[in-house]
Length: 263
Ligand SMILES: Nc1ncnc2c1ncn2[C@@H]1O[C@H](COP(=O)(O)OP(=O)(O)OP(=O)(O)O)[C@@H](O)[C@H]1O
Ligand SMILES: [Mg+2]
Image (tube, rainbow, N blue to C red; front, side, top):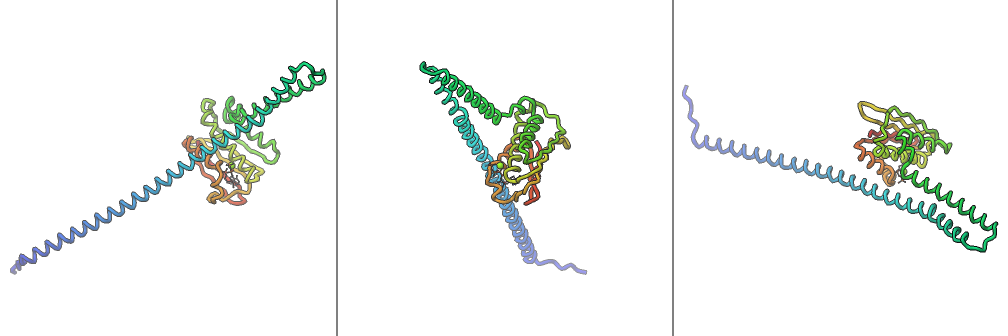
């Protein structure tokens, strides 16, 4: 058998076509990687932008709440303390006037005593709102117990509270956030949910401290735009971020609200 030699020009064209084939394949591969990389970069950028927007929203909510809080404190100080001290001051000047009957002196003095007592009570209330003394002195457990009692005393709601964690008082600064979160959740349950039963449980699971909160109110659509208009829930999220925790909020209309967060 004799081997037929491949003609030289046929060999050259096979080599050229193979090279062109390889070149085309490489081009397709390069283009494929280029476009898929571009797509990945684009979706990563979009994700980062969404995260940034979310952080911005949280920051804005925090600033707005701080401003609201300042306004509220200013209003409380103005209406409940300054105005009363003004009248006390006026009454004291009156007392200094010489031509007063005994009856007038007694009247003005009792007025001053009443007003100073009220101003004192109000200043205690304002301080209490800013930093609940029970929480500050006796820790989160005592603070939450007192909060539950305050809500239960309104008789419109029963609060079941159970704590299976030992909290250290040295952590009070961080735990104040947990207290504020519960305060907001309870306010929402009464204001919006018209709940009659609230349940709070602190427990430890796999080394994580967890709070389970639920109410039996009218519930709400967690994804609706309306539920995103307030500041309360945004503040809760920024407090959770501060605590490096995570939160899940589940609710359905007429099925109450269930919130679980770790801290
Ligand atoms: N426990 C709940 N039951 C029913 N609806 C709720 C509950 N918690 C929240 N919502 C709904 O979610 C919305 C957002 O709550 P959020 O606390 O953020 O704002 P807000 O209470 O309306 O106002 P703010 O807290 O700023 O005073 C509420 O307006 C309400 O419609
Ligand atoms: Mg609220």
